[in-house]
Length: 127
Image (cartoon, rainbow, N blue to C red; front, side, top):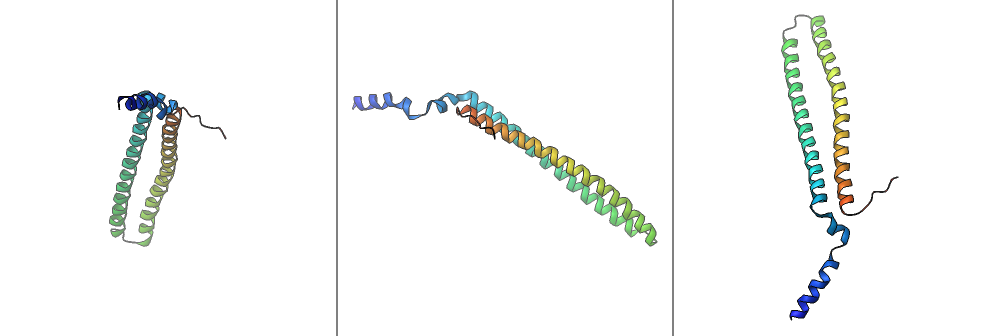
């Protein structure tokens, strides 16, 4: 029986492929750091969009209050024109923010993937 366990111990190094065994804590730490950055970016994006939704609600409430106080159609048109101008500006900012945040998230995701591949001893192929 002692001989069986000795044979199992001798064969144990062959069970795990060497690149995976070499991954160790260094590669795992790199992947974990990249994942932490990815989730931090997701959290920041979530907060930013939540703030934007709050602003949207405030603007809608403000528009309703101003339109309720209008005494003539031209006055209501001016209020609506000003509100629409602010809205268009915010839409442009939203688009820029979306592109920027998407790029940051894509970079963080790529870093996680690259660290995992490199840590496992694999190389990414260039297209």
